[in-house]
Image 1 (cartoon, one colour):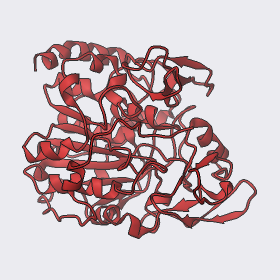
Image 2 (image 1 turned 90 degrees about the horizontal axis):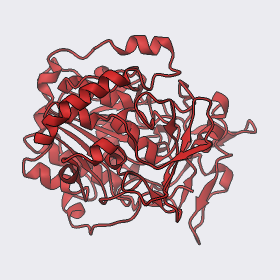
Image 3 (image 1 turned 135 degrees about the vertical axis):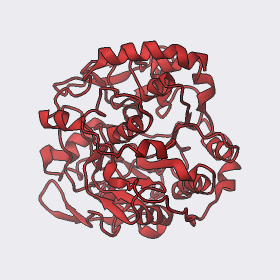
Image 4 (image 1 turned 120 degrees about the vertical axis):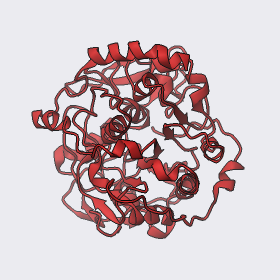
Length: 453
């Protein structure tokens, strides 16, 4: 706690200096609307815990196709003007689609959304995969992901949730902490790709091997700069510490990595809390809930096998998410918790909704978002535009943290997804093929949970 109290002055100073750090290029109307608080005043007294479950690499058209009330389609256009039917593929399909920034640009095709046949892809050795030009045009059958559909239909599903960045996991995990991937407060230079060590292995963070680098993108959209993947930037974690509140970030393994978000923020990496509040493996969150040790703000990232990441997942992702939600729902924490389940990037998969373009790296394609809480609207589909900054803004308002001054400024606060004037709803357990005990029994892993190419 001493470290948290000592951080107050430093954080407030940083806030004063970073102002509108990541609103460069955003329309004036977005900046003007961003400061309007819509959540009712009593909301902050009803939410004491925010849990952000960050899964991997899916779009609404791919993972929630056919969800009642949601905007999904079963066909799309290719670059030749042909209509391509989306093909059903297992969650564990043996191929993945490129989701670097170059892939976003190819698929976005200047807003025509017809370049998904041009994205590169990889088929596992000795596997049978669709032709390269139709791999991105896929959807996961509903019976493969029943727990996700159960949660989305019972609580709130957002079909206008956009990944804020136009790239892969490493920068996306910076956005869910800082609302940006800028290299320092106030900069217009952003980390735009996954980080690599000198031996071309995935890495990321201030513990990366010497000589590691991440590609950067500038305001003109050029990716011709690199730097060591460790940033001098504000994050929600520092704001939480400044209020003497608690946080935990659950990840597959300790040390550097693409999903090791806090490791890449130098002030967090060097704080006393880093050694206690960055926790591995992810299943420890189940134990902490059972022991009455859920922090005020929690990020839960998966193992590679439970990640939904094409080519890595074993299909257990829906059960993993259900086990975390179920643990909270059956605990003392249900009555005052908001859970956000979202996916860190689109994974290269087809989506038909063109994202708003604020600058050279924002926004990316849609990703799913499920809002779960005793105050979440039941059976509701939100068509309001959201992005990762919306989750940060909700958290800032719930705990009176102040603003990061990044994309949280222009973002909404997800107020349409809640009804805080009603009595809290009773939790309904979620049926899933695998239960919490399955995940608690899994061996620890140091597998790097991404296979970008």
